[in-house]
Length: 215
Length: 215
DNA sequence: CGCATGGCGTACCGTACGGTACGGTTCAGC
DNA sequence: GCTGAACCGTACCGTACGGTACGCCATGCG
Image (cartoon, rainbow over all chains, first blue to last red; front, side, top):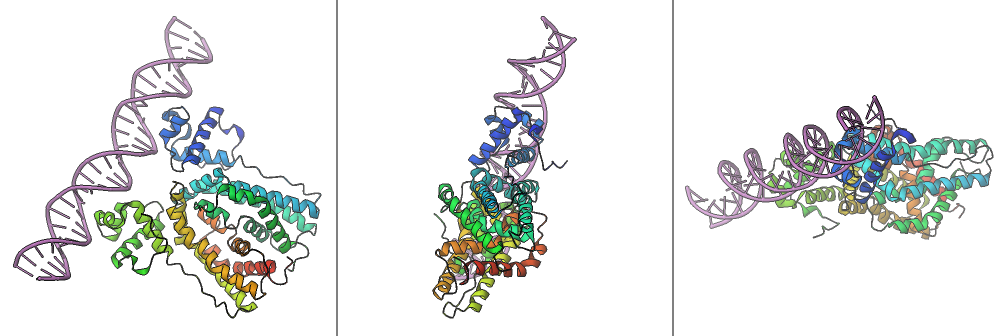
């Protein structure tokens, strides 16, 4: 059975969540160190229990990624009182959340795990990460953009294209470099520039799609 | 010994290159299917030879990635006769090369492999891919951008920032979605839009950094 | 108290794969 | 033709790890 994309709080018992936390910790500590034995030892449970609860190694991995990914929450924007100021602040909020998420160790680990998984022609993890990463951003951002267009605060023909420009302006080459382990991009190094980068990205996006932009 | 970042044509004998081709093919066919036995069989050589030539599995992997990555060539732009037209065409050329490279199966495979490798606290493959991917683009693009600024065709304070904006506008969320195995992004699907995307990205970049842009 | 259930810890099995050893073959140089 | 180096094919070893089996303990229930 294909696991559902969305999971709720009660999908896992507290004990199971403790196991998933242990698994995630191991994953973050050293990527491929997620052996069933290691998880069992870390979580002080037996391997037999792991197999009973999660089926097999892939099931455990999927549950871990799914459970963690579901924790990522997007800001909710009030679409009814859109002004230039509110729009800018909302965009900056989105950009900041996106950037801080992306540069976090957990996100890097999850993306690496899912990409490794996808390299084995299994895209389940990839879909989960996609659904809770880029696509979640897209789902939440598009309505804002369209509301802003209706309020004459933005100009574009395709909200899809506008979203993608925003994504690109915010993320640039940071994510791929972090995923590849670029030594020049330390966590703190990037973190320190988040505020400035967010502002630049938002300014650029508004310059491209704001009401005064050349179409 | 750390392998050199740059390799030349003669680094590998033809027979060795045949082996590397086999290895690359196996990688592309099914990501992690790169077992020493499989490579030996595919290349009709003995495992002993593999170990003699490449040391161990990691050495073979590194040689393969390095050898393939070195094949990627960037366009060379004549910096002396920069006009608006030449600049735009150069940027479009860069964008097209970048996009078509990124969406290619070989690139996806190499990036996935390097990311998987980086997840194991070994960043050698990541560095090679970085050096021949994003950083190569940066090295080649920056001089152009600076020459264009000197010729008053572009305006920016930091060429680093300008480069990153360009990268973001071109790549957007395409690479991460392909790496994660997004089913909605088929190869042909993206390929068909390369021309349009390249044009949009270049237009947007010039809108942001062209002489008429608001600083 | 007796018993069943759930879960812990550990020992165990099978397999896949990295790495090595070795006999047989081709081929260059003499 | 002789010799040695390079290389092929294959058999083999050791280990790591996914998955299973089993003994033991704790808790809840009649």
